[in-house]
Length: 236
Image (cartoon, rainbow, N blue to C red):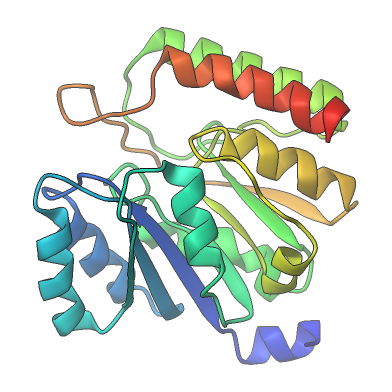
């Protein structure tokens, strides 16, 4: 696959891990399919218990996406590994199942890949896109984790923990991911940094949600992220 071929005929796989998102999964899928980019959508139900699984079966009849399911809940990273194994297109973008990240940003996130400038693109919630104003201490933790990651990878990212990451499919042939939960983000960053790939950041919008609205990440995940940053830099 050449850069010119990809730019002229972009094929994009959207990998969408889902856990207990009955209220949002229909809307996010509608937004994904409203985008002109997806050539393939792979949804992984991580053993939801709120009826999301049954709803996905009905939505699959409407949209025709690939639906994969876990028998027990394993976490976002594990769901992504399952989805990555089914990818067949040239480019891959990760899409969370809540409404925090908007597929309207696909053109911005994918542009450096389609233009042949990048191998990996991180969205960034801190480069000027509109975002909902929420938890101060979450932003402090995010900046701390990003700074620690940058120090050990020698990258200058502004938002390592961002959910929107896009990359060329062949990268999956060069990396074996292990993280099961949200520590996928620092693992991904550490491992792509070792490959000395062309990495870009682009601004994205962000509509964060509260814990009352279903937000799942917590302080324990921040601790696990620190462990992952150190592990994947020094011990693997």
